[in-house]
Image (cartoon, rainbow, N blue to C red):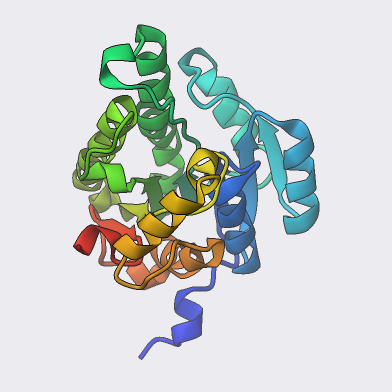
Length: 251
């Protein structure tokens, strides 16, 4: 029987985390580094990346993952510190929060480019390095809106609904090469994207009551699920969306 602790050990692995400057992306980077991975954080804010690197001992790359014209350069800079990543965690995202009648073409395109297209094209660019090792982990970020419609969420919901199918399609394409693809679907967690929600005490209480557990998410609630999907522990799990929502989606 395998050593249970070794199953989650990421020593010797290289992990890339997008959206690493704050929120769930920053937490993901810290969690993977604590498990032994050499972490490359990707974000647009240099100062926040620098403080992350001080904490994790990893590297920071300033870049826009939605800029396809610069993808080759971005990947080269991701590969530079520690070599080609074994793990990619797609945390970068945006929620423009526009009612359906008010959605602009710019907001729609911006949302789909960052939330959906970037995870695919960055993964596509990193897969050859994983394939060469015969091992890789792709973790996308889904949402409660992957399966539910929320007010002012039509663009965001469309992107996150598509993430579920993208995850399945990635699994079908690349799992034969030892590369699994899964997604985490967080419930309500306090981040920059959900600041407007957590600024409303009544809504915070309402969302907590909607869960089976009776509270909203805390950053540490994602640590275990993330480590599972990024490690050898999930070797036979691919194409799945793991909801980490306290049972919100079960009610």
